[in-house]
Image (cartoon, rainbow, N blue to C red; front, top):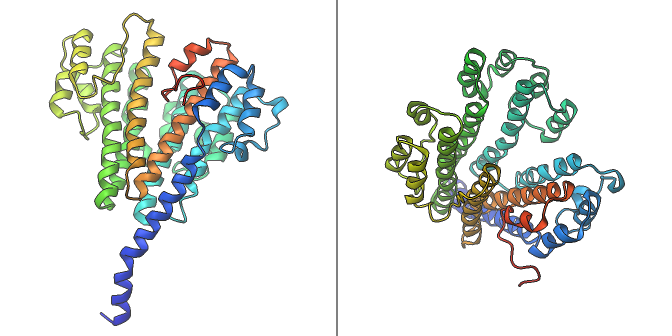
Length: 375
């Protein structure tokens, strides 16, 4: 090895560290622009319609640059929600030129969640015969890089058409069995959507294999938490709503464990009834954080359960974001927090649009809101 080659080899760790520091610094700047609780209180109790919400957001430092093209006087709920939903994706792309190959692999795997969500939307459209094709076409254009021919998929009329278009893409093997089962036996889309979500998180786990040290450790904790909670939620829904056999449930379980052991999962799969399942779920590490108020109607109960799951994930993301060393884990934690902020804004838009109780709306936000006017 020449002197020059040795010098370049010694420089690699410093270049990599500098790159990680730059990514983390940018993520912290973006995190600092996220909305405070006071802004959410104002949206809930001072805005009377969608136009006023859009105006408040456009005047904010965090969202103004993304909403400048919207005509506030003509804005519709779907248009506003559609623009907001894409903001975490736009921000993820900002890290492309700062990330090394291994770091970008992680961000790109997270980005696949947007194309998988699009795929699920198109499948629902084919399944129900309902939905706005123009809105889906606009979403295809907005997402940009997609690993399947989305425009062709949008023209499909049957699941066989979908599989034909998906052939040769990563989603063909993922969707083939559940879609064929629906065609043959008739069923819900739940197994299809489970399979697609499984593919995304498996891809995320695979993406961190090229990392080392603290970056890998922190992302394994974040993704492990998400995998645990997805397994719990899928098993709960599989049992409560879809009557899946233990064999079917086992085949759908994600092969990753963090605080939920294989023994825990096996007990849940073979619980004799839903009541026993819930008792076992409460005995897991996550049980003390999951809320399942039985005195509520089914729709409200589902919202509370989903909210408590989301809060566990955001709490983990906050802890990872705040820990000292910089890296792509800081970026991914930020992107997840931004996603949930957008989700909360969508909740508020829906509540204001349909004039639901604002005080009740607070209970279904992912963020734990401080008392109005509190510090």
